[in-house]
Length: 153
Image (cartoon, rainbow, N blue to C red):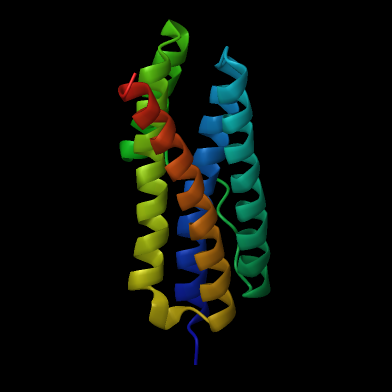
C-alpha cells in the first residue's frame, strides 16, 4: 500500500524546486538584455510552470495541499541572488554560471526524490517525476553547453 503522506511530501519537494525555478527564471527573463538568454530563461520558466501544475494535480488527487512557497533559504536562493546581481552588471558568464548552479540543485533534487522516495511512489508518479527530471536535466545541459562554449572562446 502506498503511503499518501510520503508521496505528497516528495511531490511538494519538487513543487518547491519548480517554484524556485519559476521565480528565478521569471526575474532572469525580465532582466536579461540578450534575446537568446531571454528565450532560454522563458522556456525554462515555462517547463517549471508545467511541472508544478502537473505535480500539484497529483498532490490534490492524493488529498494533499500543494506547497505554494519557494525555498527562501539555502543554496538555490543564493544562486538566484547571484543571477540578479550578474544581470545588473550584464555579466553573461556570471549569469550562466549561476543558472547552472541552480540547475545542478534542481536536477539533484529530482534524482534524490527518485532514489530516496522510490518505494513510496506509485508507478504513475515515478513515471511523471522521471519525465520531468529528463526535461529539467535537458535544460541544465543547455545551460552547461552555453557555459562551455563561452569558456572555449
